[in-house]
Image (cartoon, helix red, strand yellow):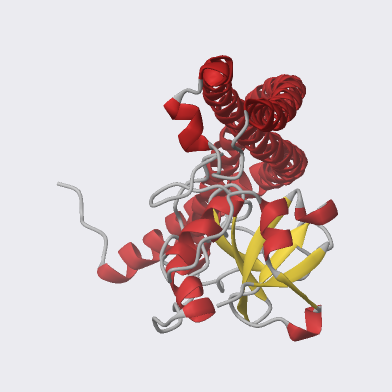
Length: 371
């Protein structure tokens, strides 16, 4: 029967074996560390490049969306103008027909004037006593009525010409909107492809970060088991590089006017961006402004360029919460709501709070909503 080792011998054996295991583990970790770090660094660089490209595509998408929004706004105005012109032409035509009926009746009455028609006598004053006077007076009235009919004919012609001209403008506006819509759809496809690529690369990066974090955790445990100190984790390992954090600002207290609009807009942070939407669950940039101010009883047009014209010009130094910040010529490309503290709430990829300075590009101007 073999003799069991003494307790002291067993402890000595464990230390030797433990040292061998830890040493082997550290050697294996050291061997794979450079390759893992390089791979992680390369993947981070790839993720950054993909994100930069996505940002460029998104910026262009916002420009095209603004152009499409403007084109549809102009098309809507053109359609209204055509409808109004056609209505004027129809009203003039109806009045013209009524005047012609009256003139025909008057002509019949004038024909009967030679027979001392009681109807004509009633139409004339007591001073027009002779047949010659009656016929002269009736001729004068007939000429006046014909002049009025001629004027109505001219007005109807002008109204019809206006309607035709405006219909041409409407057709051009419709074609322009259709052309921009095609560009918008193509850009949407490009953004979707790039967003899919970004998601794929982010997933790969997250996997590498998790693997590197696990490797270093194992290294730390091995070092602790061997009596060594815990190595410092390099900056950037195990962080959320490439992941965007949603800002979580406390909304201002409910109120009226600008403060109420800010509070309303902040309740929609995290909602998705959908072109042409104005709430309550999806929005585009000007749609968020429309919805937020509608909550406090203020109506604004659903186009950033029209909102620029509907607001009072102010300087950057005069900005207060609720004021609007416009981008692009005439505010035609984008609009956001200033919430104070050098921050904006706006709809681009989704409803989010962003820094005012350094976001996208320099603002075109600033506007204050009346009321």
